[in-house]
Image (cartoon, rainbow, N blue to C red; front, side, top):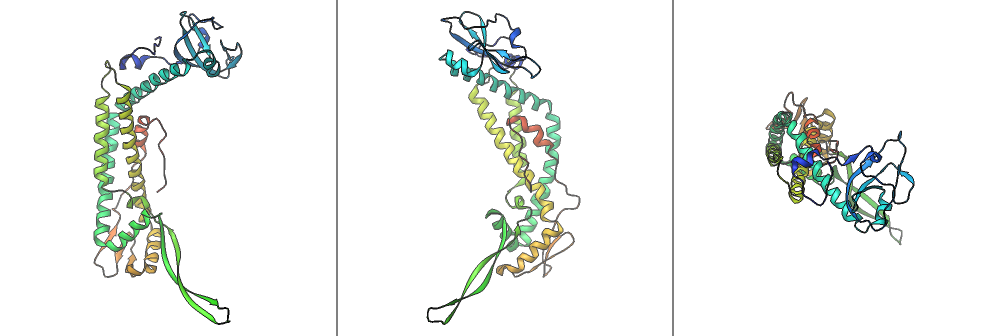
Length: 334
């Protein structure tokens, strides 16, 4: 299809449009130089040739310097191949033409992402089912921890939100010599580090089940909104959908980090560190001890542990949704 950036394309037309040209010098009505007085009507596509192919001759400078460039349609009805530098020198409307082409390409990309998402709709639903199971386990564990050991939970929560480090204060005596030779004793509190908060993301996510349900509803809405093959989806609407998709994926990334953080929180080494740290924090009074699967208060009144068989979901859902954002999903350690 020959692209005319001055007109509106239906979603169906745009889906079949070709913006990348692998054989630029085989196009119809192609000339090797710029005719005097000719104007640029539009940029029809971007060309790209492989390293095994000779470089493309630029109609602006006449040199074979480019493997990437643009096909421009002139007011004479002829086409020329141009690099960005030469095109900008030759035509005052060059940047406008580039923005129009970029707009069409961006709209096409998003429509293609919607199509891929639609093709994977069943797999996405299955993955959301797995996430909901993990979200239920995460919410239940956090609720049990918060209710049974509120002092310890709140201390860990605060440390996670304030830089993510477990710290305590150690009172030390400081000796100074006065000018008259006498000694002066003072005290100060030094900050002692005990390590990073294990499973830090667990304390940064609220209402995991609700977050998962909300994300699922958002993706379903995006799929329904994309089912308009013969209509024209406005650029502003596409940008709004993309922004919503990005926000949804970000929330799921954060949630997945919390899913992965839950086993890290209940790892034997993590539990030992938490118990040792609690002994150094005055208001906690070291009133907790480790069990093979979790923590228990010394008085036995409350305990918390990770559900048997719990495992975080894979990255499959994030990978399936990645096209909606136009970026690589960020893999963060728990």
